[in-house]
Image (cartoon, rainbow, N blue to C red; front, side, top):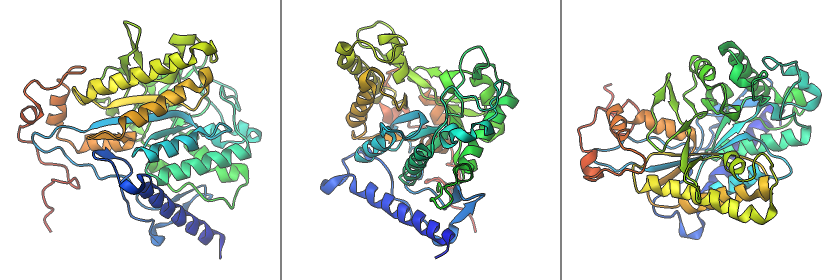
Length: 421
């Protein structure tokens, strides 16, 4: 069998495995009421498989388990969306990428993994990276080795086949005033984005792993959003992203209200939620909880690890219920695959997934799925939802609040007018 044929078969087998795994994740009792995890999708047809470039990526058709968005009916209560997202996603000896893939499947969830391009670039090829305002081969997060690249590619492949999103966290993760991303121009952002794509599209050439299976997507089409390093440089990044066809950004800070578009992109910023034991609220990211607990020390007082983890978990859960019982605004959560303060934040995130994702009307989704749903809605409905403040449920009830006659749904969305032949 030719190498290309072997790879194609491998992809189709992986897709079938993803379908089986998603279907088996609920156990013998079937999915819980109201849970919305990976949705059934068609297997990869043989005739749509096409290697791209050096075979690092491939077009394999529509993504499995990507649900078709439905427009809210008049008077219908919105679902509660929750997005768990990961900055700089990669698989190392901690195996957190693979672990949270399993956590997602077991709890009817899909997630967004923001892949760092340099995680697919071997150390010996580091000078292929030409970061803006830095010398070639510079990176504040280093590069990778062949074992790490193979492990990261495997997890990204399986994650996508299970319905998760592969976004980008760009490359060198430069922060601060000295050449940090906050100082980059629009053109410098375009260069950084182009290189992030290039490292994903050429990982086989750069590693020599020619016989490995490709990533089963066209990254030019798959990549529709990002989060900037340290939440810096959003203004010029968004200008570049809009010109490059991105659909959303998650680099800001917001309250728990319904999102709107900002400069042509959906603003899906992380949010402020209650911080137990404090009068101020906290951003929904592990790093920010850590800084407010142990400062910049990633390993503080071990006697406080459990307490700090409970603070994060309880804060996220309180934020969830505030929306779930209130305005139903999507809850946006950001994290890193890390072991700060004894791994307490990873346990807090896992506990939160288990607490919220199996409840009725809750959909733990990727950013891709959320923007698909937002784009399918009547703009007037979203405008009305944005009138609800943090934790505010409609006084007259949802049926009355959203009972107005909606505009026709966009073509291709359930509820749209039939297309005349």
